[in-house]
Image (cartoon, rainbow, N blue to C red; front, top):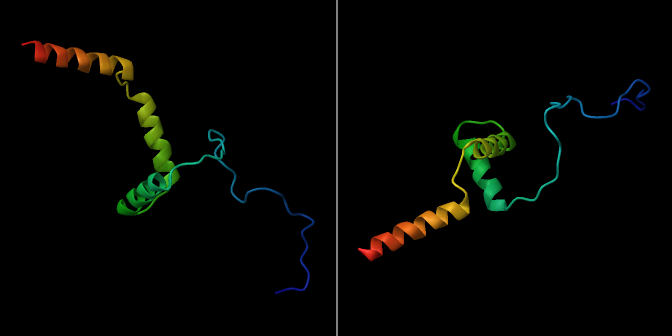
Length: 85
């Protein structure tokens, strides 16, 4: 190890520049959810659990699902019809 180092040409910031399409945020997620994603990454042989979370969120956004209210109305209607017979 040297006694002194020259940092006069050093630059602040991350060593690797980040993807401009991504935004750094702070978010609190339940430990069991994080553990589940980490386990899945381990099962597939590696990768990044954050990428897996991001992909899961994207899939959820792009998958058209029945709104919760409409789902409840449909189920109640089906049950009422079933019990009316």
